[in-house]
Length: 569
Image (cartoon, rainbow, N blue to C red):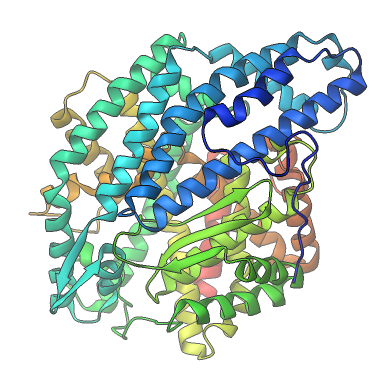
């Protein structure tokens, strides 16, 4: 088992419990008042600040985790809400004060160690856009994101005399029985329709508040504000728009070909949305595990073959109770890996129901977890706050790197072939969906004056642009119009989605290296992740043996490689 020593407290008392702002405020004041008279004292001051950030991050993490594992737990929800509404606003104000103090210390230019230039670059940008007037608005937006989780977590449908969660309902879309697939698709859509206006209204209010945040910070629109807030120094909106065009030109036709093949193999006159998850040979859906305990065992075995160190990380998390994997009523949707900077091992949350998708989610979140282990020893918490383009490279690469070891999950060669083909098709089909969500956000936040009806029209137009010409959505305009509401990123983490496209391209390149030299590719992968955010994005990708590149030529090259691998399965 991979042991990971918790960070030792040197500045804060070991017995300190963050109960409210008052319990932590004195330590912010101490750092604000401390004299710093040398580079050595500055490094000591930075480590104390880092310790304070780690403790607060972990406290917020556990409150979020406990709220999301049971959205019906009113006490857990109240504790999380108290943290985001009462503690975080004060933390943000004092963080701004401390960061301004840091940048005013003359010795800051003497810190040339690895990581500091990138770290200070990010701080300077945060200082540039911080406005105290935005602090309460950001708190309100966090509370509204929590509201979204509660609404989605409460959704369920009745199926054959049983009330089931939407993730469980979605697994029925893999059924060979087409009437059954259509019926569950309609049940899911009907359930979503019940909260459509509620979610429309919530999003409407969030857009209005986000516009105020942007204007307060001196930006023309929320898109430009978020590019700054997310620290996107290595790509901008124009790169995203170019990526959209590349996907439309080079990926959508490939996906159309896959959909045409699916339609023909299923013997259908028309391919409908409920036909996209079923095995095209008409076989029953793959059910690779019976329960989450078996899923963990399987994942550990796969990780062990890829790199024994990866398996040790997962064993540590299991021993420490940092896995919550099954789907339950009242549980928040989706899946995540939550870093816990003080204690070390992260927490994996997901909604497994026994499908191949669950296997992918598990290895995906496992990639994030490995990333957390690899960066735990970095001396500054800020070095571990890597951008999503790096975080998702870790997880999406793990999906592909593990594929040569899936025989441990799918011992039947026919099932193994099916699982690999599903994954490679997913690698291709995810790119148009990423482009859809990202392009929709670009449109929405550069047109905040749009009504809900205008946004709905834009969604339909964007979905048609990247949805291809094969899937038949006739008579399903209502169902199509609600699709965006299932994407939690739009509500909880705006503009965090293009990263999946960037990282998917990176993951394909990592996998291509692995096919050529497995040992070297895994080592480069680990080396790159170990950097955290101590280097600019292009250098981190270079350490992984790949390019940070969104150009059409590069997209076409990588898609061609996946196509060849798909044909070889």
